[in-house]
Image (cartoon, rainbow, N blue to C red):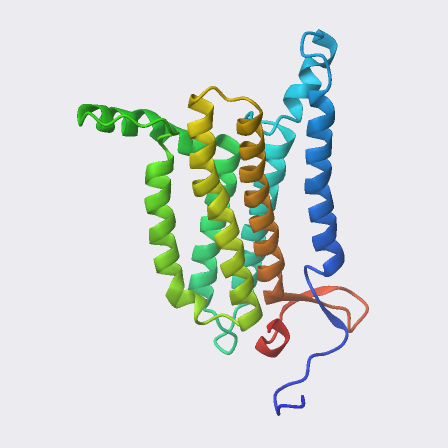
Length: 246
C-alpha cells in the first residue's frame, strides 16, 4: 500500500515516455532548426544544393520538418490508442474517450503530412469575396479557429476525468499548439502577403516550433497513461494507475 492508503507503484514499472526520450525529441527539433539555418547559407543558385535546401525547409510541404511533426502526432495517436486497448473501468478515462482522442491525433498527423487544411483556402476565399470581405491571411485559419474552439470546449469534460499531471500537460500542450497553429500562423500569413522577408521567416519558425513543442508536451503527457513493466525481465506495456500518472 502507498502512503495515502492507495496501491503503491511497482518500482520496476517505468513511464513509457521518460525524461531522456523527451529531451531527445526536443534535441531533434532544435537540430532541425540548426540544419535549416545552415542550409539557408548555401547558394540557392547552385543546383547541387537546391535539393538540400528544399528538404530541410520549414516552409515547404513534404520536407523533413513536416514529417517530423507528423511523426510526433502519430506517436501521440499510437499512445492514446494503446492506452485505450489497455483501458479498464477502474482506470479513467474511458476506452471510448481515448479512442476518440487517438483518432483526432491521427487525423492531425495525416493533415500535417498531406496539408489537407489548405483545401479550405479556396472555398473560404470565395465565400468571403461574395460578401465583399478582403483579408490578407491564409483562409484555412478561419475554419481552423472554429474547429479549435469546438475541440477545446468538447475536451473540457474529458479533461476533468484525467489524472492531474496528464490533464495539466495536455492543457499546456493544446495551448502551445494552437497559439502556433492559429495565432502565430495568422500573423505570419499577414506578413507573407505583406512581402515576406526575414520577419515572415521568424514568424513561420515560431509557429512551427510552437506546434512541435506542443506535440512533444502532449506525447510526454499521454505517455503517463502507459508504463513498461520489467518485473519478469521481459518488457510488457501496462496501464499506469492514477497515483502514478499524477
